[in-house]
Structures are given as C-alpha cells and as structure tokens.
Image (cartoon, rainbow, N blue to C red; front, side, top):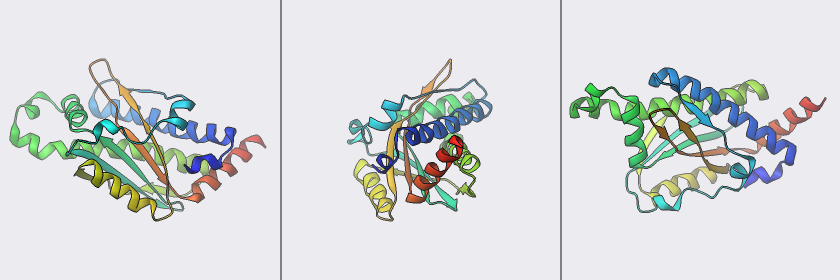
Length: 205
C-alpha cells in the first residue's frame, strides 16, 4: 500500500482531505435526497488498516461497481462498490414512492440514481484534493458496471498495472431513515503522494 511512503503527519493530511471531501459529499447528498445525510467519520486506524474489499461479497454476482476517473495534473480512479442489497437500500431512500412502485420507471431511473450518487461523492473528494493541493484535476463522467467479485478484482488489477496504488476502506452515510455503507477505493499515482508531501511542508512553513 503506497500510503506507507507517507510519514504519520502526511498520512493525517491525506485522511483529513478525504474526510473533508466526504463531509461535503454528505451536504450535497442531503440536498439531492431531500433529507439530512451525515458522514460518519472513520478513524485513522480504520483508514490505514482496513482490509481489502469485504470478502463477504465474494459470492455476489451483481455488485454495483462505480468508477470516476481523475482527469488533469494527477492520475487516479475513484471507485464506489455496493452490493445488490446496498444499492436497493440506497434507491429506496433516494427515489419517491411513485417511482419505486412503477417497474417501468424504476428500470429507467435505478442506474441513474447510482451514477448521480457516485458523481456527488467522487466529485466532492476530487474537488477537495484539487483545492487544497492546488492542482488542476476533475472527475470524468461516472461509469457503472454490474459484475461479480472476480470480475471486479480483475478490473482493479488492470488499473493498478498502470502504476496506480490502492487504498480501500468502508465509508458510512447515515440519515434518520436510512444509511448506506459502500466500499471506497482510491487508486492514485505517485504524483498524488508527492503533492501531499509538499502540501504538508507548506502547512508547517
């Protein structure tokens, strides 16, 4: 895991940037879903030592694998992973009853909801990196694939073959009525690490 190249202070900076992005994502999700959404912050230990993707999903054949590519000065891919049950729970929370009760409307809207949620979360984190590290980056149009566990791991391995490193952890968004807990994977190039190091030094100056 390439984040080991960062010292303790630099790791804290990386964690804070991602956390702040996810807090802002929760604010945008609140507007989108018309209810108060909060991000349950993770601890440094959870962030640095969490295992790879939940092995309980290994038998799943309809994993919702959402990706947004980082475009610009730095290279990376932001991934959100939902099980079928988690995706259904999110759609139930986000869509009004008249759509949920209509198979035709659900067919039209279900993937769009997932793509929009991915767009909100990924864009918030990417924007936070862009603003704080002072680099010109933005997210691509998100992509949704429905895959099994082995197919998903193969896609991630292909991305990492392009000299991208991987951090995996679970994030949690909660409301009074619902919650969803996707896996979050950040694939990033060495330039991200160098930018975090430089940003940490600039904060100390």
